[in-house]
Length: 224
Ligand code: C5J
Image 1: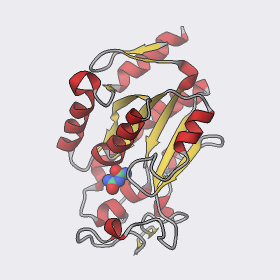
Image 2 (image 1 turned 90 degrees about the horizontal axis):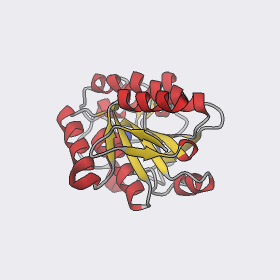
Image 3 (image 1 turned 180 degrees about the horizontal axis):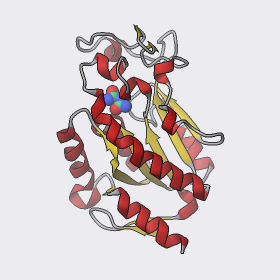
Image 4 (image 1 turned 60 degrees about the vertical axis):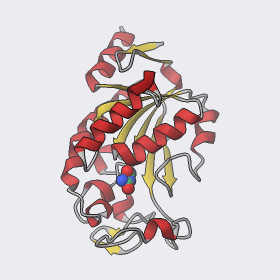
């Protein structure tokens, strides 16, 4: 077991059975002209999570440990996009509308792809998810079970929406979950901070949170 100094207490993870789960690091959320921007958000607020996530990705790849990438995405005919999701609010553009990077959140469009820095490598799991949570209407549970994965380390965007939703889904399915604080971001920094507090409160009611340095320190120590 590798022990990471985390909140509310040490997070202990088995080396080969811990997947890095990178949530929705897509151009549509992070770059101007995508879905996040269409909702009126300052997408530059998400950039800070890119390099820390890349550092985690490098650490997992160097050890040959499992990596999962998710994409919030829909079929071109939007058959998996409920009207309740598409029609809510007054965005500049809606899911499926043509934007600067193609149709928003539609599979196969440039904006739906993961940002180049974090592009999935061959053999890594890529989950297209129509919801905020990565377990809803996807094969994620089967993919994890097939590999004997019991622990999940989370990165990605946005903290209080798709990251927290997926952590809660994972927690309910029995996975032990850690969120790496610098590797996640929100359009609302105060929501990121609150989401982390919600996760670790009440003895870790959803899971654990740790700074990147604590993860790196534990991994370096385990290699010695
Ligand atoms: C949102 C996400 N915020 N990936 N999606 O709509 O968090």
